Length: 116
Image (cartoon, rainbow, N blue to C red; front, side):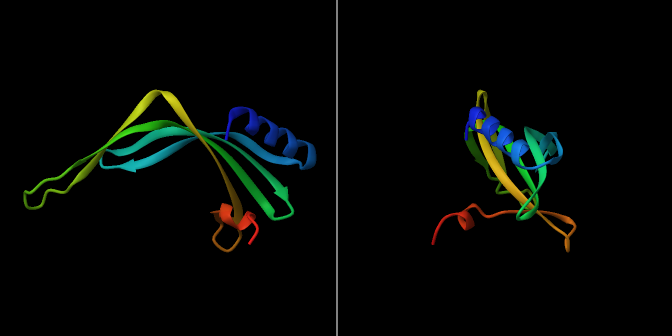
């Protein structure tokens, strides 16, 4: 996914559907050190033939290194340390459908869009 393609998708949705809401939200991840902002996501909520739909374009720094720290002391747990790039970003597009029963967004599996 690229920034240009995301722009094309937004334009198409705005042309064909009436957006209910759009904006930017932080991507928060729970770590051993507490909650940490890992990136941000631009989102667009609209009514589609699938029902209420949310597209989320995520921007996160590229993970460069993953270190495992083990402890052999009783009661001490292992932890994982991540090193992220200061310059490279990874872009991801996720689609969600509103679930009335759970009153929450449920991610749409991308493989369901491919032919069998």
